[in-house]
Picture 1 (cartoon, rainbow, N blue to C red):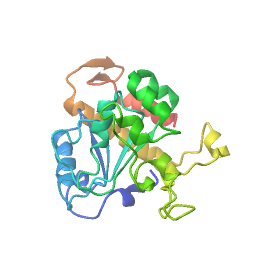
Picture 2 (cartoon, one colour):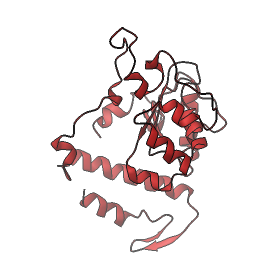
Picture 3 (cartoon, rainbow, N blue to C red):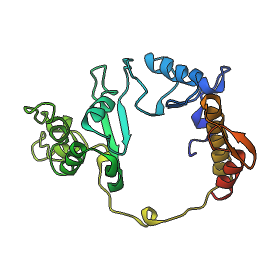
Picture 4 (cartoon, rainbow, N blue to C red):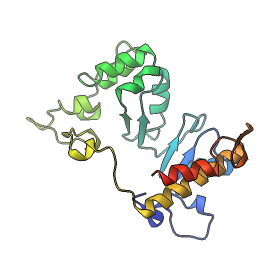
Length: 235
């Protein structure tokens, strides 16, 4: 929403979805959009820079040039975590995988993930997440190349570290903004939300084989025009 139309698409005459910097990839994504994301990630000439995806992205395909994997919530088990993290860094360059989670996300996780997550704030994340696969695993030297916990302990410059801690690893105190339960939504953001929801509806309609009814007639997935308008009106 902050990027707006001018920041989300590059200029050109090709179809809009081919010029978008943001990709969506999951089981119900239309095949032409899947192909666009896949072809973009297979080489350096593609336009897609960020993909919101399920684990189906990159199955059986070796995507190079991927530097970040951001997990929304811990993976269900450590094997899945390893597979998801392995989407990045396949070209041998330094890569990062970042977990954004709250305690409630652990409810559906298996015990091995729960144990690793509990260890990770205070001990080496690499060891916490890999020791069940390799009992000889250890932290990488220099420590700034290992994980965020080890990076904060790194003294490669004597009393401190040559490499600054990435901004996504910097701790910050809660602000009044963090505690707010609501905010003002601009007209542009409301229009953006509406356009996005109709695009999602179109995507679901092209793939879903399930049929159900609502007040507007038959829909294939439950995301009807009436529901979209209700969501938008309450934004």
